[in-house]
Image (cartoon, rainbow, N blue to C red; front, side, top):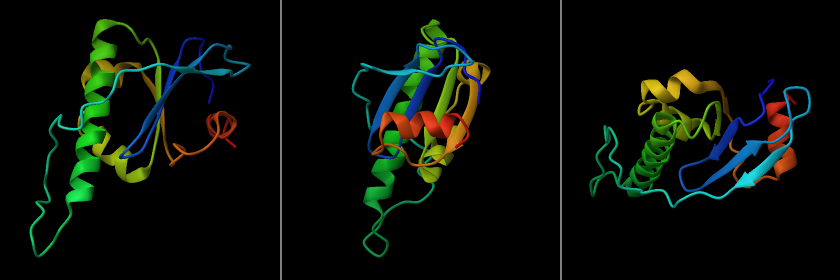
Length: 133
């Protein structure tokens, strides 16, 4: 995947997010870690599956809420113009939940998605996945 200079890459799962900015160009990807605010885990989700005593799923509901919180943060940055280009790399389950909350402004700057959990991996692994490896 060719990424213009300045592209923000969000690497997330249901519990953690890392943000990177491409400081290289389309031909030479070079990710640099970005500082970011804490994500609110109570951003609200579709909550289609309610947890109950017979079917406790509190952990999944918390992860879904965190995923929604990530997108709320990214939506705000897209709306304010802080991000011009974005790629989201997320665990498949988290990515599915995140897609439900994309604002049109975020969708417009989204260059691609990779359904892969790389939150615990090195920056080099993220760069390799973005390069198609």
